[in-house]
Image (tube, rainbow, N blue to C red; front, side, top):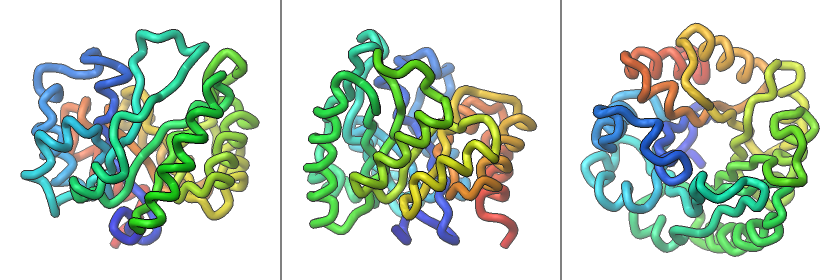
Length: 248
C-alpha cells in the first residue's frame, strides 16, 4: 500500500475508460496514451490506472515515474446496463509481470450478474494476498435492481460490500454532499474510500467537490477526464494534489 499512497492518501490518474466509453471521451491529443501518461508522470499521482493493452504498449517508458494499477476487468457500453457484467480481461499474473503495484476490479452491486463478479473477485483477492499487492474495487450500484445509483444508501451499501470482500481501497461515486459521503466512508470502515472524478467539470467546481470529498473523511480520488481533458492538465493536477495531500 505504501507504493500507491502518500500520507495515507490516494490520487490515481485513470485512463481505463476506453473499453467502456469508446473513443468519445478523447480528442486528437488525449487519445494518445503517451500524452496522458506524460501528464500523469509530471503530477503527484500515486498510481496510473490502465487496461492491459495500454500498459503493455506504453507503460515501459514511464516505469518508475508513476505506479501502475492494472484494471483486470471491463465491459463496453453497447450491452444494456440492466444485465451489466464486467468480465475479466487480465489476470493477477499479468499485473505482476507488468510490474503493477495494485490491481483494480469493477463490481456492479445489484446487477443480475453480481454473484459472478463477486466470485471472480474472490479468486483475484486470494491471488493478490499471495503476491502481496493491494486490491482496488470499483463498487458501483448498477443494473435492473438498482433504482438510484448514487443514493447514499446504495453507494454506502456498495462501499460496505468492498470492506466485506476484503478490498484495500474502494472507488465509489460521490453522493453530493460531505454529510452524506461521511456515511459512505463510515460504511467502508478500514477499507479506504476514494471518489470517482466523473465527467469533466469546471476547475472551480471540481476543486470544490474535491474539498468536500476530503472533508468527509475520504482517502482521495481516481480522476481521469477532469485532468487529461483539461487544457492545462498539470495545473489542475497540482490543485487536486494540494487538496488531497495538503501542503508539504
